[in-house]
Amino acid sequence: MAIRTSDAEWKGTLKDGEGHMRLGSQAFEGRYSFASRFEDGGGTNPEELIGAAHAGCYSMALAADLGGAGFSPEYVRTTAKVHLNPRDGGGFEINKIELTTAAKVPGVEPSKFMEIAEQTKINCPVSYALRSVPDVTLDATLET
Image (cartoon, rainbow, N blue to C red; front, side):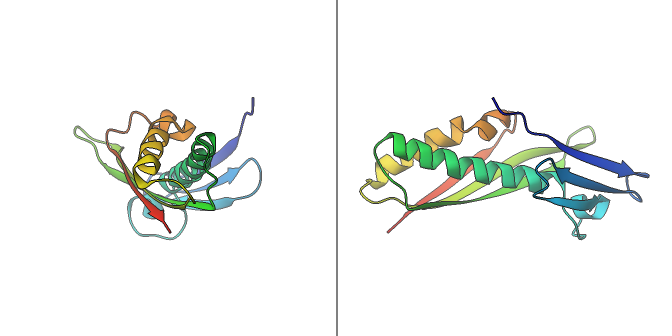
């Protein structure tokens, strides 16, 4: 199966240093810093990349699961909000991910769509990898 690689480098101290992340495919590279991760500074951060991975995986997996149930989605759009918060005892943790998805799927009943959407939340590969996150929510909308 596929093996994907990305890399990062950090120079300096936590608060005064800076880093650079790059996807192995060269599709993205960007800088990150203490301010871009823990404040509102410019640049990216690991949590933003986790969110992109989760949203992308979920959208693709939901399309596959709907297809497996005999439905052909016109589109699936997903946003992932990754919450990074202080951890009791020090440090930080990702303690919540909010998935919001909207899909246009001709012929599917809303209850069936929700059933498939909830199963996908549990089983998409990135959701599975992130199963240690204690709170993953899903707000799914079937658009007409």
